[in-house]
Image 1 (spheres, helix red, strand yellow):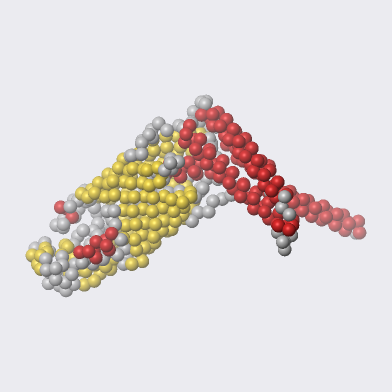
Image 2 (image 1 turned 180 degrees about the horizontal axis):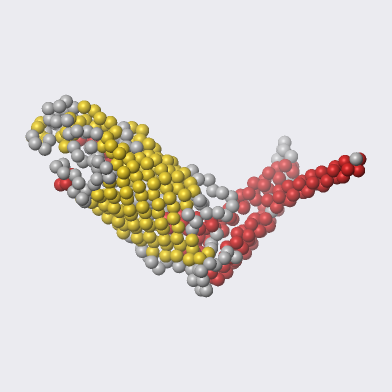
Length: 447
């Protein structure tokens, strides 16, 4: 019994020593330049040895591909349904007078992985209508709400010639990149250790010198690791952009979201010219889902193909089925009679709220050597409001000195009610309009 107890105690002691040693090794390795270099080499080795299946594989690491896609995808940012891999972005729609401010709350993982999913929260507000209404003494069409959307990203796919030189050239360039980064890491670490060793007790009064050095060393190598992993990813992305050593990069994503209005839309409605004005309210709640396929080719350019569905709370005013009357003793029409209105801005007809399902398709093409493209969107409404609308756009992307998209414009030709659904209203006489959207991605990418 005593021998057995001694044997158990011996095993426990050995186990504790092993755990302590492993913990010590991990801590020491985490505070050395060699561990950082080994981690970069391991990422590079994974890319180099990735199976080449019929010309499809990895040319850069997953986090490098995140950076590559963030700049390519953000070259088109026209509406709220478009993807941005930046932490913050703003959409402005001049035709609707809407501004949308969005924030991506995704936190990057520490390992080399592609962005799999994220949540975006945003606020939408109508300011152009409120400003215009104040000038002409009309009722405000206030719109303020919050949007929450979840996006699931597909795994990026890179295509290149199976037996060509693209893979070999990228492997060689990355190997050189790793060796250059390793030299820089060792140089910085050596300079830091020399400075740390020169630190004396009288320079940190009231503190334990060994503890001070330990904390400084830990913070330095943590910062050094983050900095050089980021550099490795950025340099790979730049290499792929500058050399164009690939035939095609493809990706896809699906977004599900809701829009929750805070302030209701308010309308002044008269059933007919002899009926007193009454207030009506609408909360334009939305539920939407979209799926986008993306292709990037050095020769052909960039293509976005999006299919979306939406259901929202619509109303008779937005549906164009009511007559509009004016203030200041002006004459208005109810479809039959000419009347004088002096009770403020109002609409004449039967008001109601209703659910409108919407199906949308959109294609965007930007040539590879151009910052100007073309887009086409078609939208079919169902239910009480059945109008068929479309948008023809000319997207323009402006880049900064690093070649990264800085701001997106899209001049639009809006074609409303193409199927002539709306009858006997003012809308058939004004079915074509000009619009402009602005998309501004900023801050860092979700990485």
